[in-house]
Amino acid sequence: MAASLRDPPFISSPSSSSCDTDDEGVRGTCEDASLCKRFAVSIGYWHDPYIQHLVRLTKERKAPEINRGYFARVHGVSQLLKAFLRKTECHCQILNLGAGMDTTFWKLKDEDLLPSKYFEVDFPMIVTRKLHNIKLPTLLITECVLVYMTPEQSTSLLKWAANTFETAMLINYEQVNMDDRFGQIMIENLRRRQCDLAGVETCKSLESQKERLLASGWETASAVDMMELYSRLPRAEVSRIESLEFLDEMELLEQLMQHYCLCWATKGGQELGLKEITC
Image 1 (tube, rainbow, N blue to C red):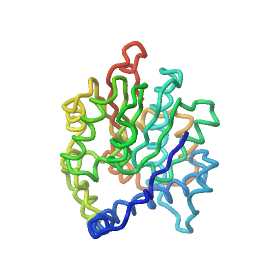
Image 2: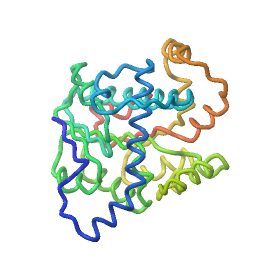
Image 3: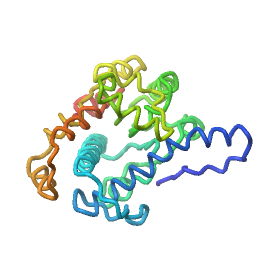
Image 4: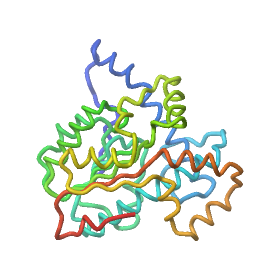
């Protein structure tokens, strides 16, 4: 079962109109990410037969460092997601928060790896209203979602999830090491697009990422920057995608990947071996 809740039928009001304006920059990142993934798929970085039905192919060529970054992101999230599904033998559910144009549901269906339930949502308050009574093993996915919330809001969501689900895993992909000069440039570039990272102060380091998960009630927490994850990818796959196009600025790729990370946390599930999952 897949649910898409990007456009809930809320009645218009002055306050909701104001919220829509405030969220416009954040919504724009969904379009940007979708176009980047669509382009990377079109030149062979990974196989996704469904994204073409959801996202147009832009004429603008994306830079190699962007394509490789998305390749690492998709591969890393997929590896952890499938590990969770195999540990639970698919007797679980997945909540993909801020899913946008993600096509994971259909790809899992093709591989006969569908969980018992699969939900896609965009706004955290929908999780509270729709899923507060769920008790099955649950996987929550947040890719570049928490960073757009204030630390108080993201902490509230993380605590709610840890307190609500007895057996659960969280996968979070977002920025890290944002206190250095490169991180500040990233922040300034987004601000020029009217897109503020309200939760950037939680993205200081891998340690700060793990600490907030543990402080929110999760029992285990791990984090790795994307350059480290890229170095762990299967060499044959890396060689394949690196042969697709020439990259003359390896240093830029390293800087970009060192400023994004993949974090995961678990609660319960000792009998399933959730604590053993890694990437």
